[in-house]
Image 1 (cartoon, helix red, strand yellow):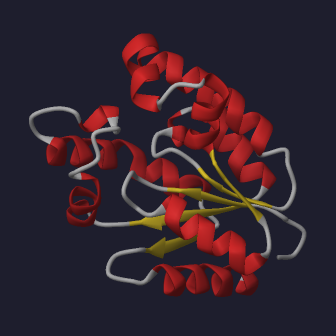
Image 2 (cartoon, rainbow, N blue to C red):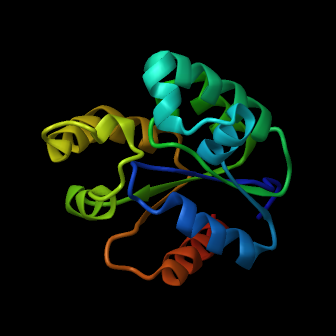
Length: 172
């Protein structure tokens, strides 16, 4: 992987960052870390509860601290939360400390993959699809801005997406 020892996965919720990240870490013999799971482990509270109590601003503050720390590790695959890239510092940490892979997926896939998940605070409303569209409009450019590699996850198996990421990383 030519100098950079970390792989950071960014993309919208439902893109498969955690699932693909685990496969990628296993294949590359790296440690897998999910930033949201790390925040939950450190606080002892689920993400949706943190959003309820501290709001998105409080959550983003915690997330920034965790991402700053985790991106300094070596030999990891890190799955970030969908909104992690909204903080400029996070984009700097991710872009500067590893290979950033944007897992791109369609709104339809996001809706399908998140519709039964009650632990996604930004989707607990009357029209989750409209929320996903609005988030995509705000965040897509930010994902692309720091991505070294962009891989579509629609209709592809976990293993094939992981293999595609590895081959693109090795080419680059």
